[in-house]
Image (cartoon, rainbow, N blue to C red):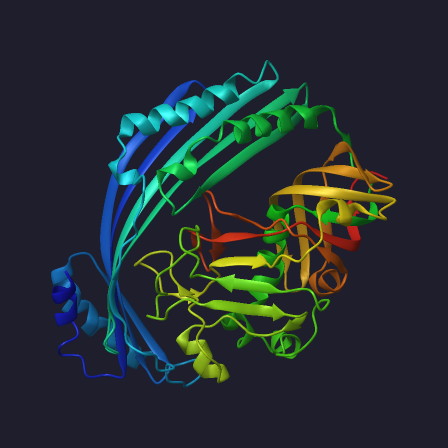
Length: 456
């Protein structure tokens, strides 16, 4: 395969070209209620060619490896027709010649479809046994092998294999017109063992849905809040990570004025990281789609903006260094600047220390959705608990957090020591490319003056 693709560049004489070719083998199993709705194995393959000429980009796709020369010619033609947003030449990088093949203890590709169905049925049965208030359940298993080839005129020749596996179990509980949801998802690139022994997690999701039926609506107001690792990770990914992606910054004059290296965005103990090199995580990549090795990038270090996330093109435009964040959903898309594994670094506070001194607050757990508009954010949590005089109290629901991300970061009071990264099914959406595999997380964090929507 490598030799066939490499020959596609033999006659190319332009500034730069690269070829991505993928073979994807995917297993999907779905239970809806008691019924097995789907159990399938699918295979797809194809490639994409990019050509750069002084900042003009041409892109063409192809299905069969032997069609690669025609795609190179078409991408080259398109790059000469297009006018660049800004003229720039890609930052040079050292070529990579390597194979990146994961070593998995329990390789999901070697597990029978029957065993996968039986595992998902076990989790689905737990959901179904939740009682008469459980009105519907949906359980999904997916694994995917992505066999990738990356060839560039820089001399990079790479074969990489990524193997994902994950499960999501979702339920609805109802009491008359009061309907509440519970869900859990888990999975990454560590192998089939990542989806085993999760019975307790599924049980807790069912209990949450039922408990939310009797939980009171949160009283709206301004609170000191403790965010659990999941919603802390979603917050930092959505509200600040996307602002750090350089293809947003160089196109937006306001962001250029805000996202200045060295500017303070949080207290000294706040560190925010994107790191695609964390093997086994959902967002792990061996190389990005510019042929750049991923690295540990401190977006915020000691409270100050330390770096922006870059492709080779945005790095050239901004006279900075590529960070290994050029990513496409698959071969049919042009790479964009995207996050990988994004998180808040741990500090030394225990959960008990985070609670200390909070007379009236909220412990916010899980994330079920949200939106951002530049620096403004709105997030909904799965559930929350009142904090009264330093103690976690009763569950409340319909908790919506809103605010300005820059003010909220400055209001972080403490960062915990119980770091956790979340993967699972789903992923990040940007530019119509959804769901791109990512991980997000951190420890518990404590923030003052967070506006919570609810009843009054």
